[in-house]
Image (tube, rainbow, N blue to C red; front, side, top):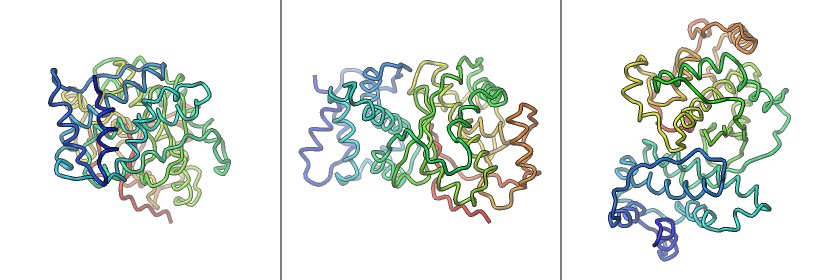
Length: 351
C-alpha cells in the first residue's frame, strides 16, 4: 500500500514548477478507511523506528493543523519551498541511512525531522511557516564548539541539568501542566549543538532525550550583547530551562508528538493567565524562573543584580528573580505554540 511519503515524492517529481501541498494531503488522507488523528510517537532510542514514525507523523500533523490549512489551502508552493521536505523524506526512506558508517548523516536527519515535527503542529502564520519549510535542511550538528566565549559552554549547560534549582522549577512546571509528579531524569539529557543558515530567530528546540541548541544563534546573541558573559549565561539558563520542560513533558507520557495545549484545562486551573501566558511548557518554565518572559537583550539590565541572581542560582542559594530589581523588560507579544525557542523579528540592541 502506498504511503503518504511515497505519494509526496511521486507528486513532487511529477510537478514541473509548483504544487498545492494541502490539496495533496487532503486527497491522500480523505481516501483512508480510518480517520486521521494526531497519533503518539514513542520516545525510543531505536533510531530506525524513530525515523519511520517521524516520517508518518509529520505528514499527519500537517494534515491535522488548522492553521496550516487556513494559511496555505489555496497556495501553490514553488518546488523550491518543498525541496527540503522532499530531500528529507527521500533520505528517510533510504535504508542506507541506517548504515553504521552514516551515523553523522542519521543524526542530522533525526534533528531535522524533530524540528519539522514541532513546526508541523504550530499555530504559524504563512511567512514563518515558509521560512522554516525552506530552510530547516540547513540544520547541521556540530561536534566541537568554538572556544570564544571564555568558558566551556557545553560543560556549563551540562552542569545546569544537574542543578537542584533548575530541577525544582522543572518539577513545578510539570506539576502545573499535568497535575502529576515529574519522573524525568535530567542527567540523561544529551546536549546537541547545531549550526544553521536562514533560520533567523531559532535558538533551540526539544528532542528525544535531547536539547538542541543553535550555535549560530548563540554567537549572534553573544556579540549583540557586547560579549557580556553574565547575560550570555542567563540566556543559556533560560534556554536549557525552557527546553528541558518540553523534553520532560514528552517523556512523562512516552510521546514525542505530545503538545502542551492538550493540557489546557489543567494549566488554566493551575497557572495565572495574563499577557505573558502561553500554553507551552517551556514558556511556563521561563515564567517560573524569571517571574515572566523577560528580554535578556535589554540594554538597561541591572548587571549587579543579575550577577548576584546567577551566582546564587548556580550555588544553590536561590531566591526568586525580581524583574523590577533587574530592570528587566517583560515580553508581552504573542508567541507560537511549539517546542522550538523562536524569537521572530527580534531587533535586539545592547548598549
